[in-house]
Image 1 (cartoon, rainbow, N blue to C red):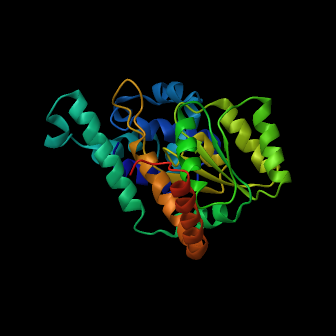
Image 2: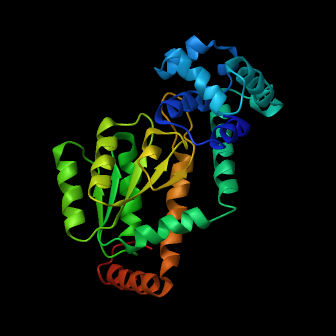
Length: 274
């Protein structure tokens, strides 16, 4: 994915319809310069005039001007991108995803703001459905060592709304949600319910124009690798651990005390062989 194309989209506040177009533009940066307005509209499931209005919103005279700019931004693949087999290119793409994540952490204020919201929530619900469920569970496993009450919500349906309502009733003030492709409808329904309950929403997602970003108070972005049969979540996993570190830094003394208590308990119960 071309970083310059991503930046082009981020410069303008977009409507929900325009976000759908932007998502296709970001995810298909190399293909869009060769698509007609009608073809892009079909991919984004919007009307053709919406594509024209989208281009104008980005500051162009129309869609042809946007396509010319995209051709300049995308350019030709580098030698590194051309070398190697499909598996090597997939791994290298993940390396690029991690590099983008690292670059985005140069200014940690957004991450710190998210950590502050999550650290203060008692309990802390963590939402992740389908492919995102393991990431929610991974976060929950480690977060429970530094946070007094973490509730992993990894099943949808009516039970999800019920558990969010219970968490809010017990004092929750924020929710962390993982929103990764393909975005489950139940996840979006859960975020809408969290908003109705007055919870602050922190989302870890793959794109600033993902469907979940529209419902989030704070959006943390980590790209997903899409070169193989199934997506690779290397960058979202790295962002998970970075967020955990930021949460632990909100109240270092409490973090240290809880970790020491866990170590004493683990030693008493002989949990680990080393």
